[in-house]
Amino acid sequence: MKDSGIPWIGEVPDDWNIFPAKGVFLERKILCGEADIHLTPSQAHGVLPQAEYMEQTGNRVVLNLAGSDKMKHVEPNDFIIHLRSFQGGIEFSRHAGKVSMAYTVLTPNGDHVIPTYFRWLLKSSAFISALAATTDQLRDGQSINYQTFGSLRLPVPPAEEQRRIADYLDRETAEIDAFIADQQQLIQLLTERRAEEIRRCVTKGLASAPTLKPSGVDWLGDVNNEWDIRRTRFLVDIRTGSGDTQDANPDGEYPFYVRSDSPERSDSWDFEGEAVLTSGDGAGVGKVFHLVNGKYKAHQRVYLLGNFRQVTASYFYYAFSTFFAEVALDGSAKSTVDSVRRHMLTELPIPLPPLEEQIQIVNYLKGYVHQLDLIIGDAERAIELSRERRAALITAAVTGKIHAPL
Image (cartoon, rainbow, N blue to C red):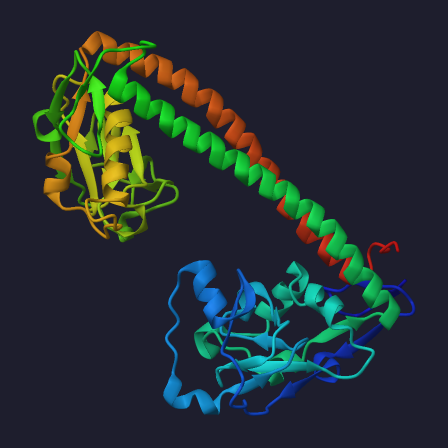
């Protein structure tokens, strides 16, 4: 082993070379042809034809047809530096096509540069850290040009070893990815099972075969025949918070509930007692719910439902979070809402059992949800550890810290 002289690379095998990136990749500056298809590079999906990208993600891409003849040509095995490459590495393209003039297209410089090896190297965590260190985001924005990239030095093993490393990482990461996919599927299954059981309990109760009646609300369906159905305005008072982003202090004494699953902290508090909190706008609509008690602060776009009448806070939390999520995420027109209006809260129907039965339902659900959450937590930790192992394996292999077997 020898010292590469590059901190992010460290020691490498004696027969490896260290070259400037501009000697490993040339910049392709050829304008596109008429038959070239639009390509979209992204960190999550790599480089895809735009039609395929939109189908996979549901994201619309605005095509600048007027300037489509002024785009850059891309060949298979080229790499693309796009606007946020310093955050997630450089994208490998298996497709021929064209990309925006704002992107930099790299092409391998010679037969000693094996694209499949550099596909792993240029997405490794060590390289991404080195790439991020080359740019001042305040000065340079999100763009990395060829000159900046070319100033980096890259490890270049012998060509045959490059192929062996690429094949090894293909095999090993495929196993890790399959395990992660299994864990994600388990989490989805358990999450759905948890939601179904909560919904069953807050519409029908704990009895195995309760007598049911139509609720009169299409999305609510049948409910326990012995229960009332009350609008939330009869059960709680509804307010909004008064805090703003500037009120957050990581070392604050009190929880500060914002429009996300994770509360922040604050030096002051505005509310005290039991309440159910939900996001008033943004990505958290229909997804973010908190059951709180004690002293706390809430963001001005967070709704507080409290001063409970005829209902316990815990039962209301289970029922409200279930039904409001369904209404907010689907709605009568089956379209996601961007923000909450007060009438959506005040007029939500809640099936209401007697208080004693509410307590029984809550006690059952606490135990049931706790058990599922333990399993989900284990799966989430397994995913996190697997991703860390995957990243470490890639960096170790592409910098020569482990020998890639045949």
